[in-house]
Length: 359
Image (cartoon, rainbow, N blue to C red; front, side, top):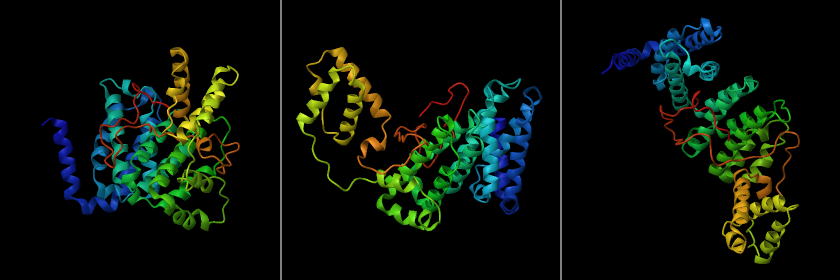
């Protein structure tokens, strides 16, 4: 056993053996570490005590392992510690900082701690804290992206998390997020909307029609204007009306428009809607007489539209009122891999080497 593992084991043993002492002071302990992190990373780069930051995070990493401590944290404490961790995580070229590789250690530890807090906290409170951080830091170039990555990880684990979620409260959290002022063509605002819609989509897919009872207990009971959530739920729920089979002549007429350069892109977009509505339809057989380059071009554009489709296109006649907010995008490929209830210490939320992939 290495010295570091022995040190960590001693901290874990100390915490567990003194649960009765630690639990009443959990908020003070985590708030103190958050304050230390804030003070460290608010300094100019040349004045940052990298070694101190590393040692603090080693201890915080062990504290975050203790679910009995994490569950004691108040909303304000959870928000404070997560905000400071995420800000530290996206510090400019963090992994290259420090004389002895402290920056890389800090990056790894910060990733682990965030994931442990996500795993050991109530998921409804985590969603609330992350959405609040997104709003507070939306003018930052990187913080919203790493917050979005955390939320997308929860999206992919929704089937396992749903039993622990307060759905009515989550709907209110999403509504509050949508009620904030947003700017047209803002990358951060658009990212936030996409994440919120992903969260709602995953909840609706698991809850089905029972989502309405949660809606009525939350947003439906409030004297507030809901321009989005209700209509989005309607569009996200499976259609009760049977879909008519697509007639071959209808598809042939659509495909014939591909031959015109003026209508090519619009026809491909329309074709992508057909393919999502009628997944049993094979387009390739209709393209079999076309040249290979042309066929590849059509399939390339189809794949592009299929990868960034909107529910307005698929759900014909759905009531939407997005107006000046943003286009509706639901992407089934989340930003993180292997999302389960166990969030896994090996998962990397952000690194200077890998960066953050877009949705």
